[in-house]
Picture (spheres, rainbow, N blue to C red):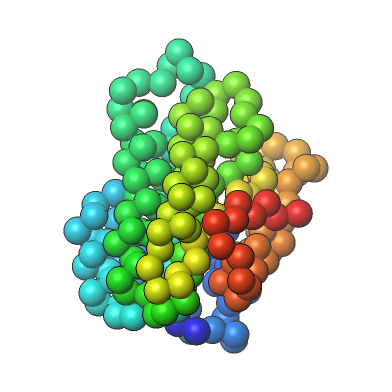
Length: 197
Ligand SMILES: NC(=O)c1ccc[n+]([C@@H]2O[C@H](COP(=O)([O-])OP(=O)(O)OC[C@H]3O[C@@H](n4cnc5c(N)ncnc54)[C@H](OP(=O)(O)O)[C@@H]3O)[C@@H](O)[C@H]2O)c1
């Protein structure tokens, strides 16, 4: 398959690329240092990416930023960033991507455990993750040409916890998280929220 992977240089994106390489053709995209450049906060940048890359069998997103702050400290700009970047960035990757996918292709997005298990400081990111999961379930009902739409909801990734100087117990290695994306691409599931374990 031809797989377009947005967020290919990130902690999770690199692990997905490793898991797919050798099985599929992987076209990496991000704002910097990838084969293809895209900014998911700009719909025209997404349209340009799809025009350049042409038809693909799978679109995978492991990109998206959201603010992480106590509720009382979250500014209008923090909410705007979270909604424009992680939420609408991925919604637009899906809706603008349908026409560039082969029949029975797939879209796989990324939410996160904070949708179901929030903690103090996660109001913006929990909002965005839950919104993405709702979007995925609904979009799966309307995607054309047998296209499947799923979302992976990773727990904390061990490498991320280590980079934050936090204990890695309870985290999952990125390589294990990446298997859920492979399942979504190669399997039959549709409208699923996939929790790596
Ligand atoms: N790591 C975790 O523990 C964890 C847990 C649960 C959920 N998640 C979610 O999983 C996703 C990936 O996490 P990660 O830890 O792998 O993130 P990361 O290491 O920060 O990587 C993010 C990737 O997305 C790209 N990116 C960022 N903003 C972009 C934009 N506007 N347009 C296009 N590409 C963009 C980055 O490259 P450029 O900066 O060059 O664009 C990079 O390739 C995020 O949505 C995160 O919330 C992560």
